[in-house]
Length: 386
Image (cartoon, rainbow, N blue to C red; front, side):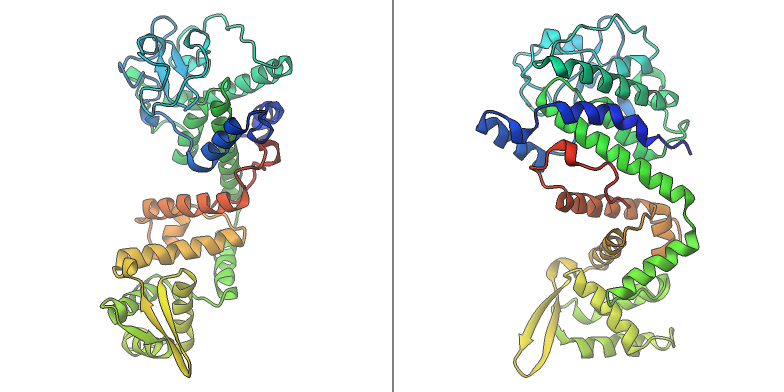
């Protein structure tokens, strides 16, 4: 696997750290709008397997009529289609275009991927003379990184996914960065987030490529046990969860003791090693995942009722898996989707399921670690990511 060097991101981080940040905007309305954007709007990318063609006319980008122009919202359309717009807004999400369309820069990173002859570079003047130098450094950095997508270049603007040494998540994140535009404020914010995400993934894959699988497994289950929880192995854990569901899926409310005894009695014929302690730890894992509605009683044990949204095995199992992923993140562990599938299910068939959970949990951890008002220069490219 080819791993991108973290040092490749120095240019773009330097550029973005020198630009006016939302917290420093002179106009309060603009600052508030930009903060809202950073907290609610995800980085958008074109259909990433078709990123070499215009999503409006479907023509492959070229150096003549169909030059690729990236907008602040990270949608990229050809110059011909852009010139036909009736209003200065993205045709896909209606994001306003604040720069004159005629002076929006051509996306040379995409042009080089279609084998087109890159024309003479546009002379672009930003609002601050000091920004010009950093803009050029950042743009060159993105163009250099885009070359890692060169093996993906296919015919008619469609990428071939099987020829790159980059992993699929790395490909998607790099395509997102390549489609970012660095002239407008919104584009710079998105580029910052895309670069950080790509940097985090690079560090993660580097760690995954060099860690010991046995030690990783031991560290994970130690972290789970440290939180009063337990994983009993793929087969036994699945049966335990199904029995919890059997006891509570009709809306019944049971005490923790009764629920644990119910599960143990039905598990023992197949799993003699089942104990009240181990099953109690499984129930604790679900409790940490907020799967129960707990009703306290004055002189008796509290009653546990399964929340309505978790009264199916798929929903309960997903929340269970997400809690274990969250524990791993808290412990600073980096685990690939393939490894998660093997650890929790004993096979590799649940790789996509685990990838979706990893993405959701990781984004939640990042939101809690990086407040929307934090200036970009304070953001580390090595945050938590599984």
